[in-house]
Image (tube, rainbow, N blue to C red):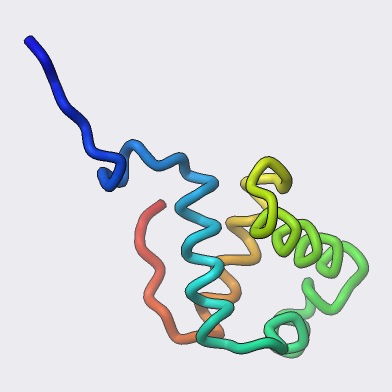
Amino acid sequence: MHIETSLNDRAMVPIKQRLLQRFAKARGVVGARWRESLAQHDPFFDSRIGEAYMRSVAQAHSDPRRGNVDRIERVTLALEKIAGLIPVPI
């Protein structure tokens, strides 16, 4: 039995990649000042640790080999909330 899969199949795209795609979409909605928006809406991101999370996710967006998936998730979910996007299950 031969089973074909499509790279468009969500199950075949790693969670990290899906989160980075969602991050990019939310960042596009919020705009270039997304970091300032996050810091204004969530006290966590107005801290040194929060800044490190945002920097890590921005770097992971440029180079997917970088970044921690938990950090990416936290930033993405917060950014989607600000953007008014309805989060879907990961």
